Image (cartoon, rainbow, N blue to C red; front, side, top):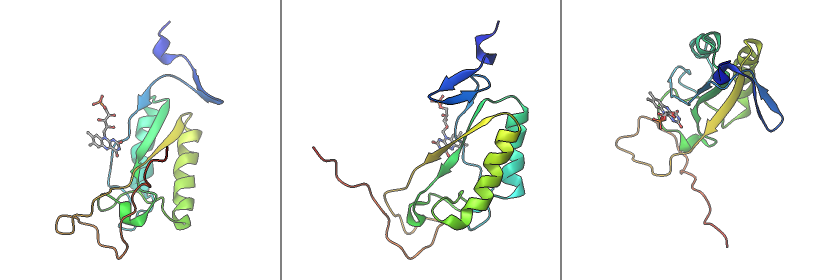
Length: 128
Ligand SMILES: Cc1cc2nc3c(=O)[nH]c(=O)nc-3n(C[C@H](O)[C@H](O)[C@H](O)COP(=O)(O)O)c2cc1C
């Protein structure tokens, strides 16, 4: 039997096989960051291809931490309906969704395609 195609468990989460899709930025969100039909179709093609764990592309937990235009938005509740639609579709296809969050630390005004009025957020200093 091919072990790759056997179910796996991470904590309490059962995954249908051991094929993991790494996070890959798609820029298929709309300009604001909402999930679009293209976003859902992109992930569903991978789910139908047999992926077990779908790591959804990088998204910033703060507006100022976004990395690029049309990045998936997770920094406001207004994105929840689209994100819920995406995760429900992935689950309905038999796969398991996972997420990646990351915020850019440095603000390069000249090069950045993103314009917003907030200061970037950075991690707090490590405590001992
Ligand atoms: C087009 C492209 C987009 C990517 N987007 C992300 C991303 O959104 N978040 C992330 O953590 N890694 C991203 N990556 C990195 C991939 O997840 C990484 O290449 C993958 O985990 C394979 O790692 P490896 O080269 O060490 O095997 C991206 C890579 C590519 C080629």
